Each structure stands twice: as structure tokens, then as C-alpha cells.
Length: 379
Ligand SMILES: Cc1ncc(COP(=O)(O)O)c(C=O)c1O
Ligand SMILES: [Zn+2]
Image (cartoon, rainbow, N blue to C red; front, top):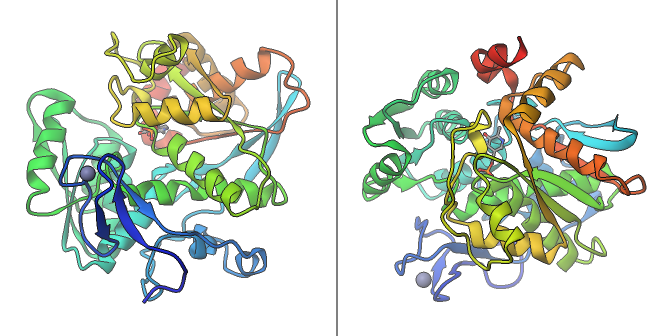
């Protein structure tokens, strides 16, 4: 059934229980996070001949051979080079993905696997880009989609979710209550969670593969990435770990995580040398996509930052607004959360001593999804 060697299964990261890849579980019965156990394959000639979407890395994705991708033509986004404070930097244009954010990478893989398993209904809790991406790919696959959001959620992203035909459920009681409602609904449906579902990370890891290829089959020295729930940070770490294990690169790039000063649990735990995240005081930030006070995968994020010799940078609301203005004035349509990452990138290069590094960052979300806040910040 599978065209790759080695065991292929889902494995629990807490108790080591195994499940078949074709089993529609998204969490271990012990409550632990699941990971995919399999061996990816990298054949540079095959990659180069496999079309200009992220499906060119199909051999490195944990899917059965007969599985048909649920695709909207995503991936292989341009990698542009520019200068920031006199330092050359590369920027991946992931805001150009079909639903307007990097979450399409995770959604295409998750929904592809869901469709292959015969899933007829998915549920998710996100009023933002993850909800929009899951709704888009569910629409493409003809799968019913229910998205649970806090009752005060509003804005273009919610309209986008509805426009794809998903049903939006407004839940009283905030973000945690929306997650609870989605969990309850997941008893009857497949939980297409960008936080829990391991297939999502196997989609976001394609950002690592694309950067590696676009740099001439080389890993950069440093990657500056946003850190909310970690679906990008952990996916990119996974991608480079797979390239390292396959002998395609010699060492892992340093990962630099950017958080908003108003909500910085990872940065605070790293600075304090803690092994696990501690509860933090969080205030609202204009970088709503990284406003996650208690991320489920916080410990994993700390691990990858330490393992790669990385660091965390926190940026103020003022720096985020300045970054947003500066990049729009250069022609880049980005949303405030994406501007936060680039504010972190500016901080990183301004530390000095990085002139000789190959530094890559990414524009994670399109500004047209957030024109009301963008307009407010530009005046
Ligand atoms: C535009 C944008 N950038 C970055 C992030 C952070 O991603 P993650 O929560 O996976 O760390 C998000 C999450 O919603 C987002 O919407
Ligand atoms: Zn378990």
C-alpha cells in the first residue's frame, strides 16, 4: 500500500502507543500528542520535475501512494532577497498562498489525509487564518466544515470562513470555551486542529523544503519565525530535522522565535531557563495570530529553540506598527501579525554581527485580510 520503507504509523509522544496512519485519530487515548512515524525520501531530480506547488515534495509527505492531493495550487512561494539595516535577508512570500496565509500548507495536507480516510465532516476552533485555511480546503474537498469561535470574534477572516461555506458557531466564554466546544463536536467529526493534528505540521514543514531548494539545496544559517501555537516554528524544525536525518544538510539552522511583548510565554520561559511554559500575564496585542498565552506545544517550542542554538525576540506594539507601515510603503501587503515577525527580524539584524549569515524570514499573512486594523495603524 505504501511506497516507502520503514514503519508508518502514528505514535504517541507520551506513552508510545501506535495507531495506523489510516486511523482517523488526532490525539492518543491517553491524551498525548501524536507524531507521524515514517521515513521521508528526497530525490532532487524528482523534486525538480514535479510541478510548482508544495506537492513537489510528495515523496517526503506521510501519505499513501494512491492518495489524491486536495489542492488549490499552493506552495513554492517566491523567496525574495532584500536588505534590512545593511544586512541581506530573504523573505518567503507565504501571504500569497490560496487563502492568504501560511496555514494553507498545513490545511492542504490535513484535509488531503482526512479526505483519503473518508472523513465527511471536520471541526476546528479558530477565528483566524487557520479557520480560513481549513474552511477553504474542506470546500475544495466537498467536506462539511464547522468552525467554533468566541462569540465576540468578527472581521474579514470570519467572513472569509463563511464565504467558503463553513458553518461558524459563536461560543460564549472566550477562546478556551471555543476549543472546548470544538473538542465536544469532535466526538462526531474529525478534529482538523492546527494545534493537535500531526498532519498539519507535515504540511507546514514544506516551508523548510522550499527554502532549502530555493537557496540551492542549502539550509540557511538563521530563520526568524513567529511563535503563537508553533505550527510554523515546529513544522519548519521538523522539515530541517528530516533533511538532516536524510543527509541533505549538514546542520540545523538557528531558529529565532518572535513573540509580542504583550504575550510572550515562550520568550519568558527561555529567558528563565525553564523546561516548561509557566502561566504568563497576557494583554491584547495587534499581532492577534501570535497572541497565545498557554500554547499546547510550548515545551516542544522551547526544545527546538534550545536544540538549534536559537533565541526568542519580543517586539512592542509600537515596533509592530512601525514595521507594518515600513513594509506596506515598500509594496508588501502584510497583516499585523506578519509585521510582528518582521519587526523581530529587524531587531535580530540590528543586534549586529549577522552580516555573514544567510537569514530567512517569512510573510505569514496577507494584509487584505485585515484592512480595518491595517488602516487604523497606518494613519
Ligand atoms: C499571520 C499569522 N502569522 C503567524 C501566526 C502564528 O502561527 P502559529 O500559531 O502556528 O505559531 C499566525 C497564527 O494564526 C498567523 O495567522
Ligand atoms: Zn498516549
